[in-house]
Length: 89
Image (tube, rainbow, N blue to C red; front, side):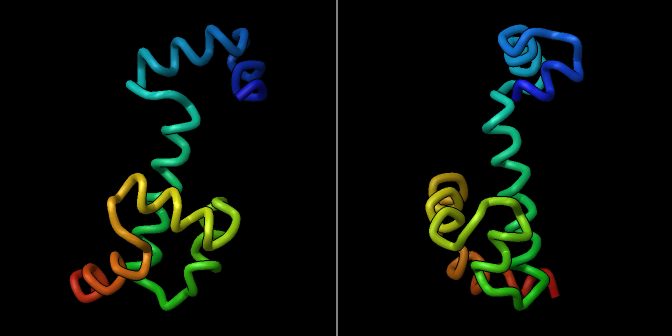
């Protein structure tokens, strides 16, 4: 976040406050949500492993993806894929 603040010519605290006023969430939560959206799209449209999806999304590994995905979406990546794969086809 410090890099984004510097690029925006703001202190980290001001950047975080303005970001939250504009986006309605913290920079970290916004970025995590974007990564989860990408993971959902990849799970729906590719045969990539959960580990490969995690890597593509910048989440790291399958364990991190499963943890964040379950917290945000409410289900596991594999269950999500089984439910929504046919809809995207």
